[in-house]
Image 1: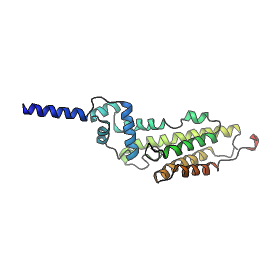
Image 2: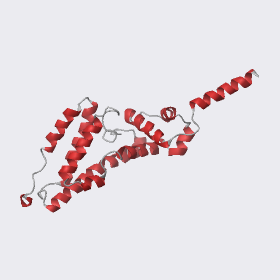
Image 3: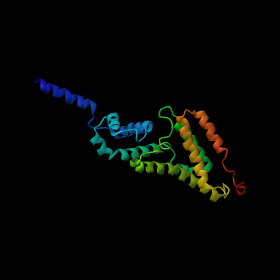
Image 4: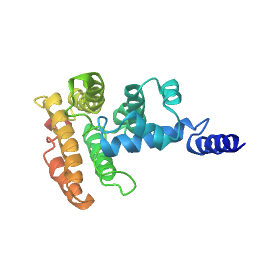
Length: 213
């Protein structure tokens, strides 16, 4: 009888520690926070299952693998920022670049999340076994730069910018500013300080083509 009671208590304890079901959206938010704070390599399957409150088989069943979960989290994180369609819809490439940088300043210094940008700083250095997921993050970083480049190229074709402007180099310059602000935020730069950095960078924007005056 004593053995039966002991088994019952053990079973009840397991039920309190592990939920039979979980909310996918909540799980993604928990995983996002863990990966953002500790990086991909700094988070284990055990860390994820304990934080979400599920067993490892349930996590694998829901997300496939740690790598696939991370990719889904990155997609969720990217969905909060400006999309390529929103950048293309801006009235000019200058407006698009300003909006991207303004959003970046707010995002990397927000008080409700870890400092910095999860994508800008994600897997910059990684072990060989994680080369696949590192490549995925590089592609995500490249998407924003590509969207800015298309916007700049559109303005060159319309005469809004002078033809000698190198769209690829200009887009990479502002993508570099954006990524640099993430690092500076982690190192303690304030929103006001990064706004000043943004304005300095935007002051280097090429002058309009004379034909458009």
